[in-house]
Image (cartoon, rainbow, N blue to C red; front, side, top):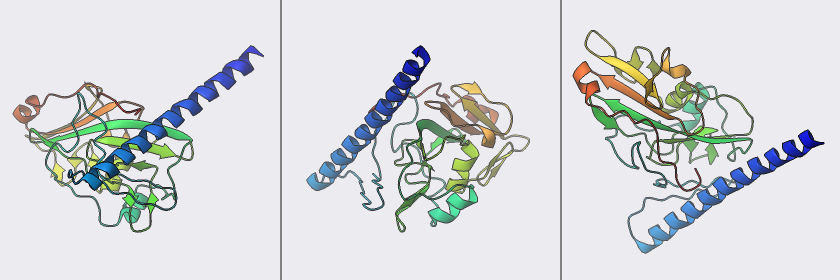
Length: 230
């Protein structure tokens, strides 16, 4: 009986956490819509249908990782999100999944400078569909909202972005005698293929490409300040 009660309590806690996260998402979306109506320049977009609500730039999180909108755009969002998502071996959904709901933060640095992680990776506005692995804004927050419990990897997210990732490649950049690619998880170097890094709740992942001096100038974040229920 004690085990059954503990299991019921854990399930109730998970349901409460998910409900709180989705309520926070709805509050941010309402705030963005108000900003648009007031003409304050917030780039918000609501896609209504199929149960999807998408904010083009929520700006919901900030902290020791990158803030929303920082860094220069080097790699754009693919023109056909559905094709990119399929290439990552992932499905397009009519609504965000609720069985698995967590968030990871990604920072990317090239030649000592931060690269922006675009908004709406894994989101197809034309068909109003969404991948279980996606971004809503330019904060670098990766949303994992899946109808089934399974592992998702950094390589899958980068494939959705159409930025090839391996031990020797980041997008159009290759390692050589003077350039290296180092992946970090929570401030510590990660061994092996960075594409195989599993996305865990509240992990901070950083990809750093460049020469030894350029990489040394990068202050690799060890964490991210999660806010608004994320």
